[in-house]
Image (tube, rainbow, N blue to C red):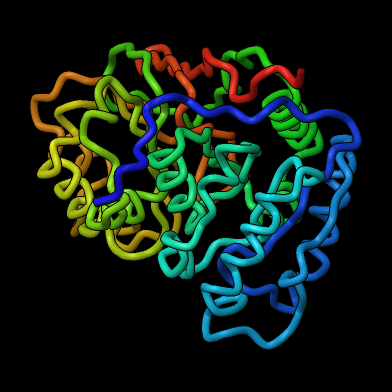
Length: 334
């Protein structure tokens, strides 16, 4: 069992105009057909006022199996970025299936010495959870570069894109809470109530799987937390199983509230006659636990993503369909 467990929130310093953001392959490779999306992501980040650079592994080239490179090589590149004081933020180009291979190779001392935002979701959920567990680092569960900033953002109306750009810019450059996240008609109250606590979450399969490793978050870390999760692929029965894992781990007995993202490509949900809805699954596992559940919030693989900074305090009022970040994700720059 590792001993470098941190319960103190470690926030990066607020970014400024001209700060360097590096896009990196932290899991899957860059495929040739997504090069235009990556270029669009670069333009989006530059439009927010940042300088942008690609890490060396982010190139259209032969990969190692399903990964951008062997896990050791990805860890080497990530560690170099964590140690480089010119790099002020790292955004994953895409998710994938590789982060489990290098969780034990991350330079956590570099994270403590110079905490910086790491942005992404999907497989990157693992990095957020493990770095938060080991150092207290705020994990920026937010859009990936290629399928997010360069893809999903292009498919929404211009007004929504401008809203997202402003939201991300404020999250990364200000040391004050950004307050209420913009609600939409997709938000649903599955169980009314209000709660306030630190956000902990990510892709639900990664939350469940990391609890089987030596990097598991102690159950006490979930006390009063707002558990947020999303899922892509598989079957609705898998979601029920992952929630049962969290129940057996004692996590559901500790949390103060739950926020569910938009499901994506989950089998069974398209046929309500033969399968329960996601709402029915969640409420079945929760049983009589009287906690608020807000669902349909725009984060996850369906994209675009509202940012959900892991470790930051949030306030949820499910009945009023309101979710607010009541603590700053970044500390003052000086």
